[in-house]
Image (cartoon, rainbow, N blue to C red; front, side):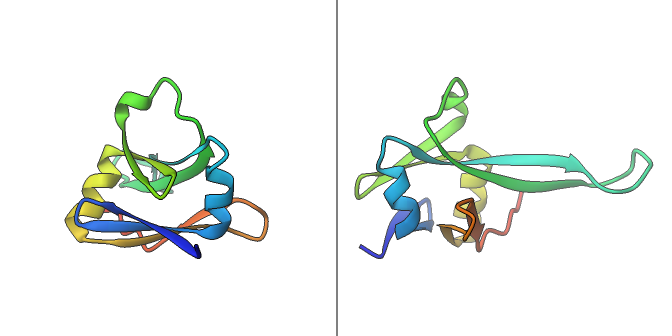
Length: 111
């Protein structure tokens, strides 16, 4: 089992082996959308969107997340990210870096 592939709409999420070892211990791979204002000083600045990824058990915001499962793993994703993956037919990879922090590759966040 080198990686787990979970279909999300018309796209898919590939979860690497190092993440799946942590996630099978009762934790979900959770992806939430983030937003912050840009670096300019006026109110006309664009909002910069991003994704926060973590390994946890979803809490009280579980209603805002869509749950997907595959090969014993659970993936909880914010609905705006699910729409972006589905719309763009994206192939995303989730893994752990050298420091043990999760990372995501291949996501083009579109509204």
